[in-house]
Image 1 (cartoon, rainbow, N blue to C red):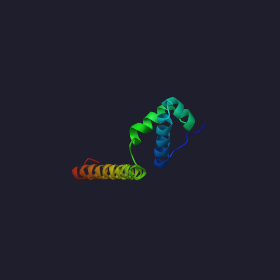
Image 2 (tube, rainbow, N blue to C red; image 1 turned 60 degrees about the horizontal axis):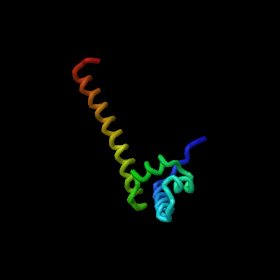
Image 3 (tube, one colour; image 1 turned 45 degrees about the vertical axis):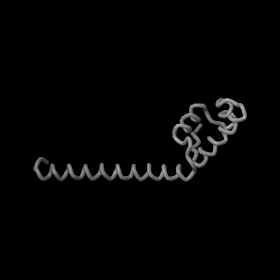
Image 4 (cartoon, rainbow, N blue to C red; image 1 turned 90 degrees about the horizontal axis):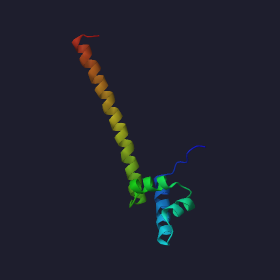
Length: 92
């Protein structure tokens, strides 16, 4: 069975639902069962997205994507630089 991917908006809404369920006297485990997620997933989401608004979560994902792109760009440029240095020394 494949994993279901949730968008940050869906995650934040589910966390809010879990808070409402818990405020009515249920436990975190019961809230997770009602939402159809594992307890581990709930705590992982709460750690990453707890207290965020939907627009903040979107911005976070955009920044993470841009950061990954920039890291790849730096790695490529470093590799090119090393190749040029080695070629300039004549050790090929």
